[in-house]
Length: 164
Image (cartoon, rainbow, N blue to C red; front, side, top):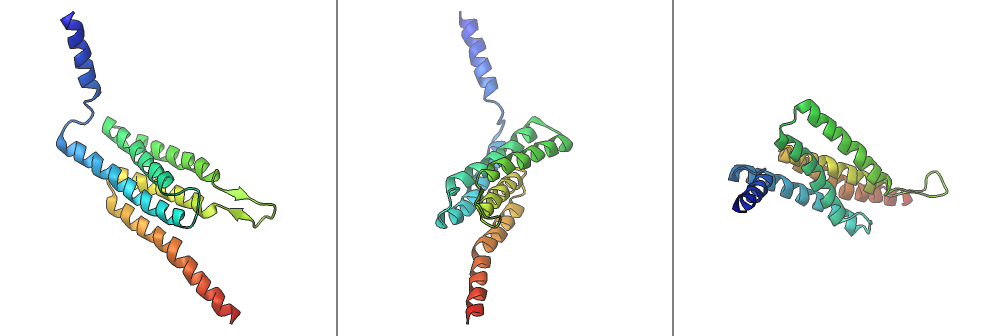
């Protein structure tokens, strides 16, 4: 009977052995936390504007995208195999973003397009963080914030000048 429990114990230990050392645990933790933080920053901006896809959605999308590239990397997939995973993320997030877009009766009456784009971009940021490209992910997040915050204000100022 003790050999059965020993086999069960060995199987459980083997199932939880994907993180082999402190370095790997730290790497994965940093990458997932970076993805969560950067996704949360973009989600916070969307939430402040009263959009349905806010902090939680953007964080989950970013972490999910990071995990989708981290796990195949851990498993030792080749770069070409990993590129197919990234292609799947891009397509899948496109469907999620499409759900955020509402079309009115008029052709120009679209709502949620910017939120859909921010969800798509958040997935790309998550992929970058998951691949260990944290600096690129941070830079992209800063550029996205500039687009989401600064550009609308510049447009408002230009519209106000036109009215004068």
